[in-house]
Length: 591
Image 1 (spheres, rainbow, N blue to C red):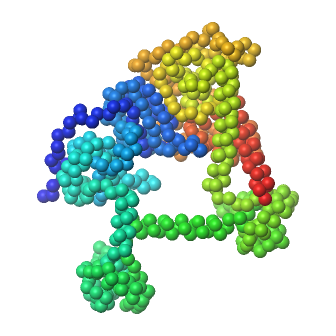
Image 2 (cartoon, rainbow, N blue to C red):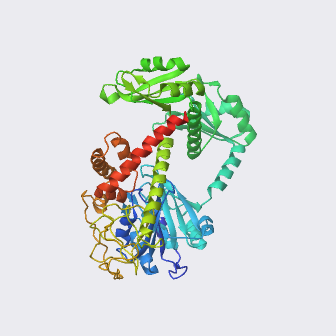
Image 3 (cartoon, one colour):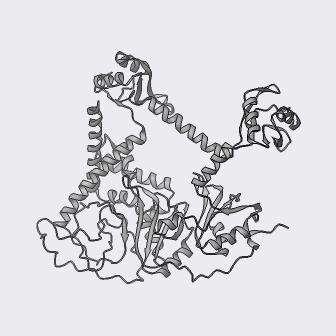
């Protein structure tokens, strides 16, 4: 009877050794919509949280999928690691480990093992439970595809190299869910690639496809053994014993394999032209196909760079032929296409593309045809851009405007008795709408409320040291003094460490993060999108669709803040309209 991994001997683990010296946790595998507020509600159950920071892209401010949670004491961190690791949050199993600030230790690979041939039913937690018997685990992860299905392999990083050695010794070759698994040291990608290159240059195994179904192993051997000594040969067959049309031959030397490949590739064998190449592993083949696809895609994009035009605001009567006829005076057109909606009787979608044979022709067409009245409508003509490039440019412009506004807002706050180093969050941060509670540091004076004109400082750290008092002041230009806080505003007192987190109160939009957390990502997006579209359509009808799409890229808590504050939303919409207008104008000027 086969021995299973569960029955393998394991060493006794000393839990008191190598204890962490800080109470900082790394939280990975986060859904992009997870914010500091969502994490706070989960981790604060364990104990008082000092701070939370979701790491974001410096330009787009999108979540990078991981965060850091800091507790006041190590005991709470250990409890969170024990009870919350692999908790499902918004459809994804989160991964928690102690934060390792030393990059050399993170990247050394010492104590890191690789496990393959895993059953797809084994998840992160099951893998962790299996290997935790051998020592303290820093990190454990199953590789998954885009749909979250296991790829059949994973990694376990032990705190001690000796524990990793014991795990390899005891589990390698054993059964997990009735599948024999391989366990070995993790080899860094750089070393793996070097090994692959070495094997490529000295391969002995060849792959043959398009083999006729009537060909047997003996017939294949007879055709290929003239090139050298064959150590193994097989034609792959299905469950019924029928040939799958491909096979493998392994020679004794590299030179013999090369000779067989060169002489037999693209030759007729058994009435069919066969294909012969170096045998590759599935992962290597997929990587090469991906590179080929990217290369073809890049070549195609470069080919049309500067010669492909984007035309919008087309009348429904404009067809491919009309477009070609109007633009043909400027040069040789290789293609002209009006985009149509197949689901709506192929009606024009109001935009199209015209591709010229040279950049000079395209430039001339832009300068002459932009704002040209075609069938009663002035058309917009510009060089076509990839969607990701166009989106990135708009995001950069939006972020630049936000940064300028933040600087102005900070300056205004400083002029009213506030200090730059105060840890205060307003505007985009959660729980900051009128009527909601805020958290302050000890000794901090509560700021004035800005009558709905809240700012956004771009800082994304959520700190819980203080609770504000029950009273909320309002800012009034006629009564505020720049050098003194109003007398009725008390200094916030320290919050008890056992205090439960404040409950979210729905603002005017009726939407809270707690409510959204119960929905799937798609349902959240639909709910927020509908609310944004309705609100934006009351401000600007022309760009309502585009602005809704742009604002949906913001964090969930920021969107809720916008929906709960009409003045802030209007300011955001005005900025977006201005950015779109300026972008279009810059496109015209670039011609």
